Image 1: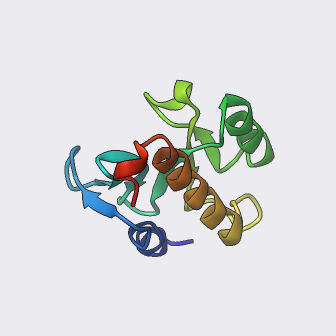
Image 2: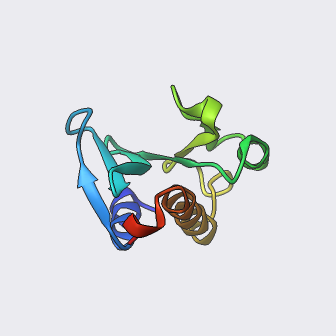
Image 3: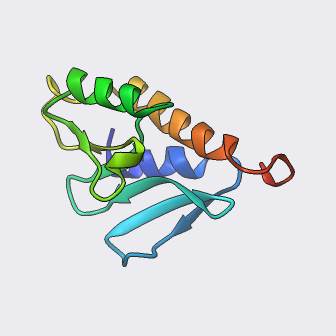
Length: 119
C-alpha cells in the first residue's frame, strides 16, 4: 500500500480524526482523542499501529515479516509495530493483511474507550 492509501483507509473509520502533534512529517490518526495509527509521511513512508491484542501477537508479526515490520520507537513495549511501506514486494506485508492490521489497531483502541464515547 502507498501512504495515501493508508491515510484514506484510516480516515474512513468512524470518528477518525487527522492530527499533526509531532509536526507535518507524522500524521497521527485518532479516534476520540486516542491514536490508532502513526503515519510517517516522508517517502516511502511507514505506519505505526497496534500489533495485535498483546505483545505476543505483535512479536509474531515481526517474525513473519522481518524486513518490513519492526518495533515502533517509544511505543513498542506496549505492543506497537512500525510497518515499512517501502519494503520490496517479496518482503512487504500484503495490502489486504495491512488493511486488516489497520482495522485491528482501530478496533483495539476503540474497544478501550468508554461505551458512551465510542463512534
